[in-house]
Image 1 (cartoon, rainbow, N blue to C red):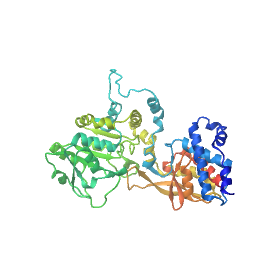
Image 2 (cartoon, rainbow, N blue to C red; image 1 turned 120 degrees about the vertical axis):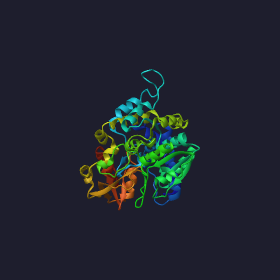
Image 3 (tube, rainbow, N blue to C red; image 1 turned 30 degrees about the vertical axis):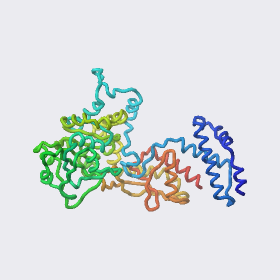
Image 4 (cartoon, helix red, strand yellow; image 1 turned 135 degrees about the horizontal axis):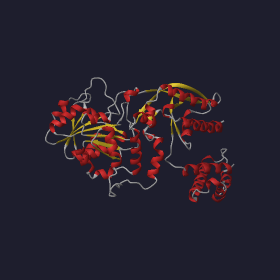
Length: 468
């Protein structure tokens, strides 16, 4: 068919609009969205005609309508949506890190969907502090004298350094000049705060005398940064927090420790490598401790600052604190998550991150069998499927070298490539994010919810049977 004939076969915008509007599901979508999608689709067909011309290209009205409907669905659906994490990376930064506990859902929504006592003291009727809702809880859980919360841990470190050491020197080991996600580096954060960086020791070994040799009348703080996103192994030496605290007391200099991921429980009890906990840092006498809320804590994105009251009060009064403060939704999610820690057994069971990290291999094997049972209908015609032993990752800059033994279901499609399947899974209403290994799709059950297994089967049914 010639180009001119193909152009004449293209339906008008009004005709496609009338066809679309006969379907009830499009009644509530704004007219502009629909007409824009129609015009965009028709323009796409015009360009295809110009390129393909007489080379077997056809114009079918029903196909154009389907293309318009797909575009409407894409443009009208939320950009920000839930996904199924089948990657096995528990704290997956690209997937929002820590999922919140279902245990807090009802209380959380009841607070954030209504007016709340965010900054009113219900006892006196006067203005209160938003920190009061979590400060006493954080102090009870960690033994700290005072606490506050800002929007993330990078903000927490920036605020602490700005409040306590601006215009002064801060001593830190060379082996702790870390770079965190998004290319943010400790030296740059320190420079932004107005503090001056003083590096001591070497990359792999730093001694207490290295800190002491550089202390002078302009020293504002001693800073220790936990290297949570990498490990230096072999011939190494790190100054313990209690040693640094003794040195700080000797010269009346505050000691700041950035724990990064901020564990509230000892994961070594559950088979993982020993990591410093917030409670241990406070017990060691560290003056100010900072850590994240959305990593090993398992809560919302937040930067938690706690420690000695004399320093926390100075930090609270710094102007930057207001710019970095958290909103009511973060505050509610954090409070309800922290309350679960009042009973460690309950926390491990109810906080998703803790439950996933401490899951025994036997439980993961049971989950893998359940997923396999859902997916075995696709064998042997559509895919090869089997249960295998794999390794999960903690992610989120925590436990960088830890490999967690896990069970996974691997799927190798037969009629199209694994890359094509990966793209189709990402285009679903509830996208399924997996990882690809040896030309197979890996579904690591550690990070998957059993309730989502049937959704995965249904989604694959649509994909495989549509492709048949």
